[in-house]
Amino acid sequence: MGRIKLALLFIVGFTVFSCQSKIDLKSDKHLNDLFSDNELKEIEKMINYVDDRVIEITGNKDIEQAYHQLLDKLLQPIDDGYTYLVPFKEEEKYKFLENLDSKVFNEFWTIGRVRKAVYQDSIYEDGYQFLELSISGRYVTDYLERLAEKDDYYKSEKETIKMAGGLAPTTKAWFLKNHTEFDFTIPKNRLWATVFILAIEEPHDKKMERYLNKK
Image (tube, rainbow, N blue to C red; front, side):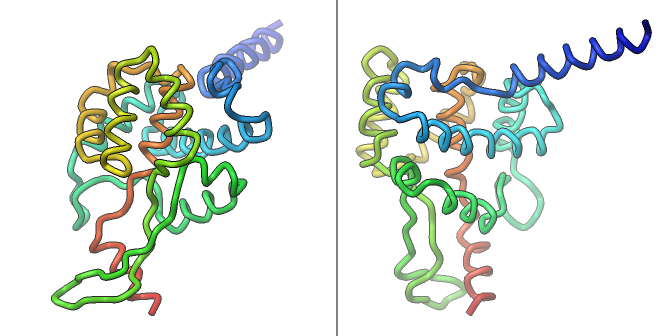
């Protein structure tokens, strides 16, 4: 009997954890209308990738709490020679994104390269690469556009992204300070947090160190 109870507790616990962490993108009508089943699976991979890192950093398996905890951490400066927490090692993150279906990647992101980079009183041509939110992909042009019809926050952010050509510093600052207003079990908010966290890049000096080490 004791073993049966233990097994049942394990099953219940596993089910609760699975429900907390897994996100049902098909429950979002706009995502379901705009992206195919295969594309939704690729988007889910992106969310799961961030979920895993959020849980790893915070040590909290309750995904809703974990996202809030990580965003709180991002507000705090860190003492490592740089100014803020970067959730992912950049080379690892780029490798993951480049392995996504290219069509889905292009609906969310663009990868650019700094043409001229100034570092320690020197100028370097054709410098490091950087990740940017695509303002022409379906995520911004179609999905955020649909959310904007009934959601004032996403309406404002869609307009700001278009004007700024990507995620503006004001967007980042506001979201970090007001993330408690969001429920990250809701697909639109979880996806927004995923995009937000993936868009965090290493500081210029750290990028330049890696770039010079490769030369």
